[in-house]
Amino acid sequence: MPSDAVRRLAAEPVDHRFKGLPPDATAAGLTVGELAGQARDLHTGGFTTPVLTLDADALAHNLAVLGEYAARHHLAFAPHGKTCMAPQLFERQLEHGAWGITAAVPHQARVYRAFGIRRIFLANELVDPAALRWVAAELAADPDFRFVCYVDSVRGVRLMDRALQGQGARVDVVVELGAGEGARTGARSDDDCRAVADAVAATATLRLVGVAGYEAEVPDADAEKVHAWLRRLTALAVEFDKAGRFGADVEEIVVSAGGSAWFDAVADVFEELPALSRPVLKLLRSGAYVSHDHGWYGRLTPFNRVPEEGGLRPAFRLWTQVVSRPSPTQAFVNAGKRDVAYDLGLPEAELVRDAFTGDERPATGVRVVKLSDQHAWLETDSAEDVQVGDWVALGMSHPCTIFEKWPLIPVVSADGAVREYVRTFF
Image 1 (tube, rainbow, N blue to C red):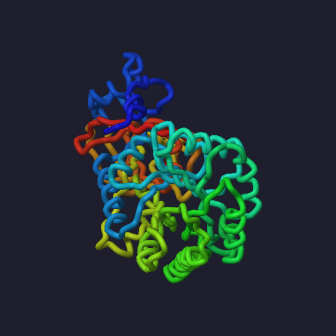
Image 2 (image 1 turned 90 degrees about the horizontal axis):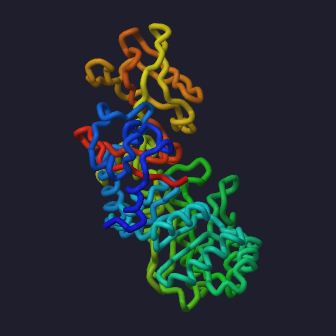
Image 3 (image 1 turned 180 degrees about the vertical axis):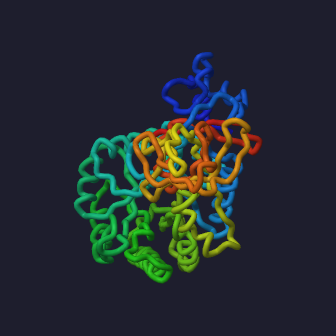
């Protein structure tokens, strides 16, 4: 059942904040819930272009597939919420067995708590004093709240300790092992990790509960290198346990990794982890799966290597409209950088819907070659490929930068009706 906070989203007015929604719904003073109750057709119900949509069936499929994958491989799952920042989707991820939700920055954690998320894994070192005091206050106020974050430096540990003095709460931390020289964050060597763990042990405000990292940052990553790095991570957990670095009050040891490109390697290596002195929370953190995409993650997904384990479907489609056809080989649609994800490649034209007949056909011969702020430049093979007024559906790469541009996203059922809207908070 949705939480009270999620249910209240349906009471928001349909207004100027939300792109692509029917203007007459605003004029009538409808709420999001009332508009959803009308189940309007995406193409004939007054929606304006550009409008981003999510496919209801693809969304349900993806949520089920990775939930089942994690369960099958005995992995706990804390999907990275920064992908969608959508509390409605967080609740569905939890319904599919997620342990909690991963965050990257304090603002995201605050959104999660506003919508009742009980377990948050913050995959960054947190040294902001105000944010740490907020975390401490949340922990003190709610005994059921679980919060874990990275530490990757002795200086960071000291800063955290200073900020948490007198706050009345201990913060659980995991030492982040960096993926290698030139990679992103994380302690670079095992000795560095030991020094960070020693620094944590010297505080009364922090509690070491495990180790973590991000395997996709392994330089020149391939299966062999990623598996080797993950074995370094699990070996560090074994070493720390044998050395007694996890306190007697630590009920489970956290070992965490896993983006959307190598979760099969994470499953392989975490399965090899020997029994430790107490239960191990093997925590996977993939996030882009929820919507998948038409390009980047379509190529990177581990299901390409292990198709027998399942597969994901691209759920996004951005419907645009041809507003200019200045030549037989050139056309312009009314969506650009303000609406489209483009950091991992230009969008791809998927479908064309005829402005007069409503017939849909594959966008054969139509290519996106450039983006302006509010236009996509199309190159076409012939004058008949698209006409002014036609709707063109674009597929895009990188869910994180798709979700962030749209505060309210229609979810389209197989019959073309919109019965749900997903609210995002970036």
